[in-house]
Length: 77
Image 1 (tube, one colour):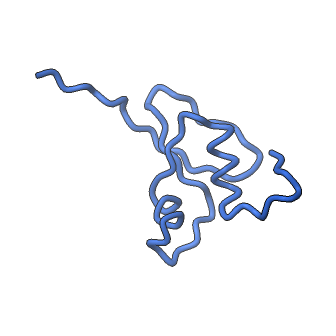
Image 2 (cartoon, rainbow, N blue to C red):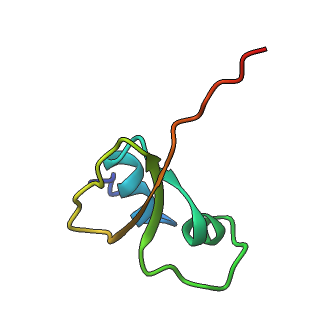
Image 3 (cartoon, rainbow, N blue to C red):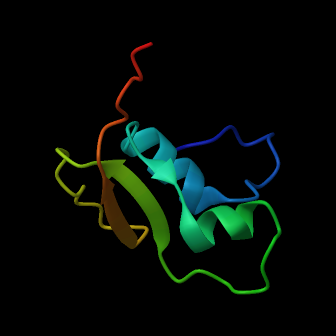
């Protein structure tokens, strides 16, 4: 991942890397709480949720904690 030199530092570079490299991921659990400044706990991994049929991504950095969730089921009226 690269950024322009004249841009300031990223506030959450690990989340930016995961968002770019794992587009189906949803930031969740402690990582989401930390992003929204709702916890004092510092996550040691980026917690992501993936559709149940997805494989866990293999990234060298940042460390990931993957949780599988079933696909959303649309409600029929």
